[in-house]
Image (cartoon, rainbow, N blue to C red; front, side, top):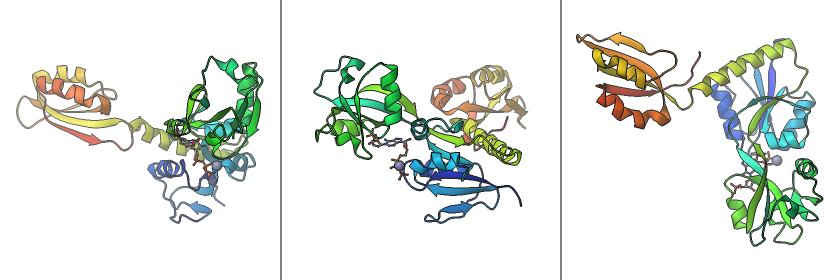
Length: 286
Ligand code: PRT
Ligand code: ZN
């Protein structure tokens, strides 16, 4: 039987859409069907297993799935049986300590002898230990941010992204303990055949990643301006320059950072560039 890799992703929730998009951007077709537990691909040896994020680390460490896409926060909490293969750049958030906004915060010692509510007791325990603090950890799952208001804790340790949930619960963020984002994780004992499929997947993900924020630029310019224009466009390696039918003119093709574009456009025009075209890049292979 042909080898297939199985990757566990979140069924629904914050990481679902970006995880699916990442797989699709790598050119992997997946059979449609939202309520399925598993879907396979007809053009890549991959199966997707849909799970709650909490179940992904265990499923991967048990070998039921070969890989998983999950928040680093979940991996840290489950303590290191998994190998982090790749940081994926989405699902960014931080794990922070927050206290009622009316409280005066003087430093980490504030937490001595306080009661902290969290769904991440292991990460919190490590932090408290590293700082030599003695606090009581109160484990709750879901709606951690209401704990101080209803009097079951003095502080919380939870995921923060925009911070608006804290604000609307009368809390303020006082310590960032860890940063998190979605990661691709795997278990340690992969067969050679599965490793080869993983390598192909990573190659594709990196090609898509490299093209992010970059645009392809084409422009025409008189030959005497070309050197000045080349200096404005560092590109991938060196730009392509092709002669135009019109004597003394060339067409120049290169790659530009999207964020630099508006700043450079005026300089390019001043240097003599005309007919500037900016087109999207889907994938970039070095
Ligand atoms: O159903 P399932 O168990 O699979 O999902 P879930 O509800 O447990 O997880 P989900 O979908 O909420 O989050 C999945 C992962 O997304 C987390 O493990 C994090 O790695 C990541 N992530 C990124 C976040 C956030 N940003 C985030 N903002 N997870 C949760 N939040 C919560 C936060 O706790 C807060 O209560 O969203 C709320 C709003 O945050 P603010 O700061 O933007 O107001
Ligand atoms: Zn969950």
